[in-house]
Image 1 (cartoon, helix red, strand yellow):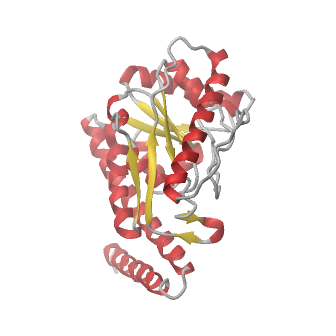
Image 2 (cartoon, one colour):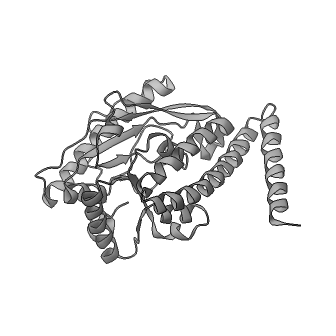
Image 3 (cartoon, one colour):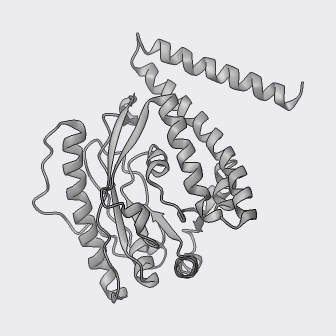
Length: 301
């Protein structure tokens, strides 16, 4: 049998499995978790494969800065069709379109944030990622071809070099980057933020570009992995006003990270109140929430 035949059998069988779990979810709600998880992985494979092709073409044409934007949009529509999940962008000032270059930062809840990126990702922007993702089939290939900044967290020297390189790229090509300052997923059931690492803020100050916070409402009512909850729905994500870094130095980074985290946490709480129709309390006092470290802990995480 040819490769095409094997691929066809796989896709037909995989699709039938997803449909079967969706049908089973009418009797057993937990089956919806399996169905949407399988559908999400299939959508990711399809869109990253498409992304590899797009990245090759865009790199040849010299437009690879928008490859991640094009791929993200495809994932947005495929996921909406296969899982019924979408993010609704609140950006009345059109900051995503008009602010460039910048360091965009957002809260990091679950793997579903890939879909959030696909929805809000601006043109001429790239993500940062751990270096070991470079070897992951499809996803790693796409990241490499589309200009992702890879970070080796085991080496503070490489991390500092990558930061300097990213700052030069931002200045030279007016290329923005999108980063998650928490450094990892929180999986929180309520609106919250993990402590911030300072890499994104060091980069913004070094490049002399603004920080643009992007906050998504807590969506544990849509996806909560520990409880095997995975429902269809719309999740609001809000683009906040740019925070200028002109004139700031390394000594200002810690306060910049602290004040930005405080602003984002308050906005996440307010946005979640609307999204879940649940009156969460806005913290009266917010702890520092910044990782006090140097070297590898202050990288592009």
